[in-house]
Length: 315
Image 1 (spheres, rainbow, N blue to C red):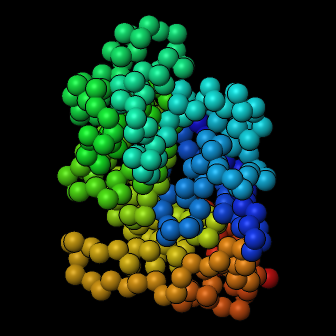
Image 2: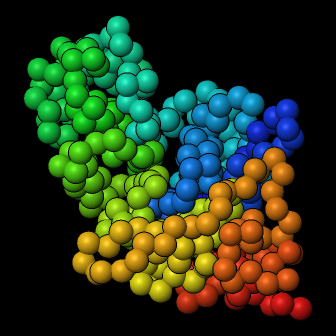
């Protein structure tokens, strides 16, 4: 298994108390797999991704658990060791490419600098690789001479993908890479991620778009309020969701092929500095019962992980 996340906890110490943004999450996937993490804003998807690459913003920190990547526990290695893994073995496409690119540095200079940091090559060799990567993501080589503001949002996103894959990482983490892009550019980016999966890379895809996740993923992880609510085969999860939150998410997504009523999820996600008693989805759940005032167990149902009293022992 390429990556095994075991009982991971990532917390933020705030004025209002401890925020458990990722709370005892366990998930694993291998090379050649496309795994989507879905859920509402603030559910912990991005924090989980940043935990994997150890770039959690202050005052956040990993407080428990393991992140086993190719047999190494990323929570225990030094920062110097982690720097050699970022970019070279784990690539990251950040949500907002404009804030991730230096506005005063040409695209080519940034890409060449990144390559030379990890590989002993000449500047000309690095420039050749950078140009090849731009062509791979559908951009002409002359974009190496452009500054970020001279590119469209879709082009900047493709530059970020080129930078994330140019060192041939085993795992690519894509955090909302299609946000605010038109459907044509969105399709191109998703096709590119599919190609990377087919080349043997693992793709960790963070998204709000359940329909997009269902269309592309091998497996889907549904997160809510820092918890992993359901995880398993994407087709099984979409066609027969087990967790009430998974069902509610799917019912809130428009379906172009079926004439059905869209049902919004009532209420809002909880304040994680003061989460509700028991199941965190309980205040919004139409299936909630008295037993849901206790934390639900995490059980295996039909090959899927589900955190819900509907499937757990009610003793």
